[in-house]
Length: 326
Image (cartoon, rainbow, N blue to C red; front, side):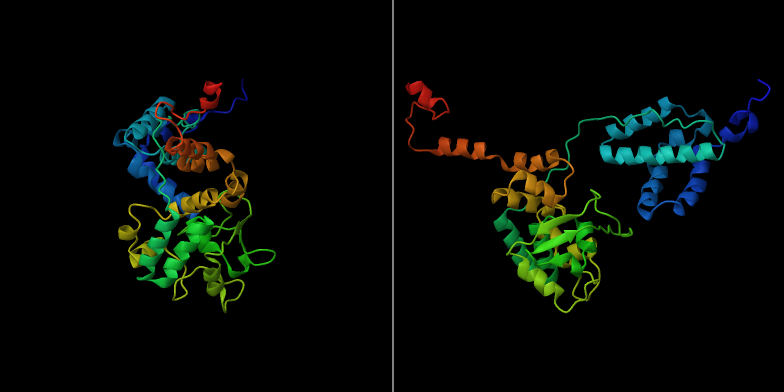
């Protein structure tokens, strides 16, 4: 008993009396030089999202119940579950820092969970093949180069961050035209691995092969493949403004070009496992969402039966029609 180490409160009785609002700036200064820019951006949203009632609390008085109530409140306000998860991660990092600084003895975020509110995901709006061509025709009137790049995105399913990071050497033609995707470069963030963490190969269809060949003409292997006419790296806001994306895309996001590619492949008969590999999905369940969007072969067969003129008025042409005849 005589060798017991004093706890935090005994070492610094006043440590936990500082309010969260006063401590957040000091924590953010530390985060600025210890985490990636992307993580720091997420952390910087913490003071804005944190309710005033909690920000005014003494840090030592915060309990896991307080944290749980804030998470539920953010979810009920309509914040996406992924955003609530990022908020919780930042909040946990803040309290973990306070523990290391011996301001408090334990992290109250540990053990709390982000509530699942069942909000529907953002609806995907892929282009149909003819719609994609119409979009390309309209966009090329504004900027041929950028319109071509968007068409490539619609046929390859590359994420915007992957499109920005591709180099000329990532395009190969033997044994077939392929793009080797192994890096991503989100805007404002350094180059990193792809979202799945794995390297993948994406075929280049004949529709966009001439475009890719033209884009690599005269370039060295380590140069960026997809750039503006002036040779600058792509930026979504500038691209959208130049091609009048908001008026031409009819409410779609650039990410819907990725959905477009998956739907084009499946509609042309590429099997689900191959689409999963080309898209870089970790789970086949993610790829399955495109089948839910497009419908399956059974759905098409059923529709063909409904539209068939060979069935009698009294016969629905259902799957049991032959059995009924017997």
